[in-house]
Amino acid sequence: MKLSKMSKNELELYSFTDLAAMILKEEKKSLNTSEIFKRICKLLDMSDEDYANKIGDFYTTLTTDKTFILLDDATWDLRDRHSVQVNLEDDTEDEEDLVETEKELDDELDDMASEDMHDMDDDSVIDDTDLDDVDDVDDDDLTILDEEELD
Image (cartoon, rainbow, N blue to C red; front, side, top):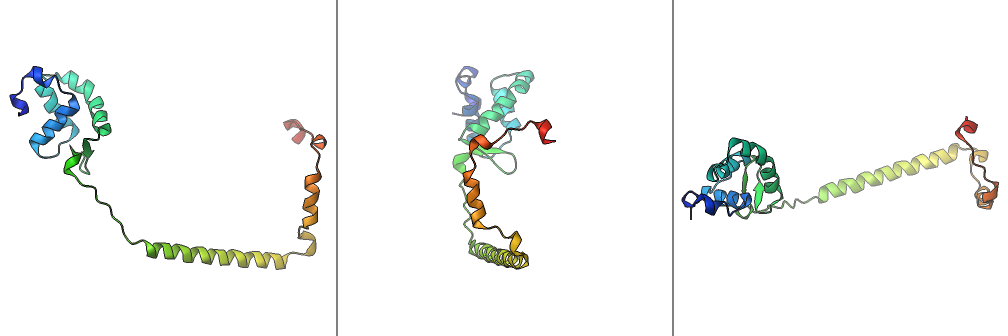
């Protein structure tokens, strides 16, 4: 049955989202939030004040209801009229470029590290035996300093 043929009492039994879905089915095209809600207000004899007070909640309901989909042109339509397109491009070239770049960076880092090791004198090289002494620190030997003492 067409919405225009229904009585106000019958229409009031439906939620705003039900009415919006019915409007979109009858129109067979997408509509923006304002157009849909103006039609609902007209069907239910709601005032302009009601429109202004409730359109925000109506928009929120549309965004959370899985029945509707917001299209690129800022209009709403029924989700079941639209299919989801998944674009599975071949990204192997990008992955190969990333792997190549990663290898180049690793090689550069290795070169830099080996140059740094050649530039160091024997005194600047950390001896592994020096690190063993760190484990021997006793908690009782630690002192807590105030910020004033740090200055």
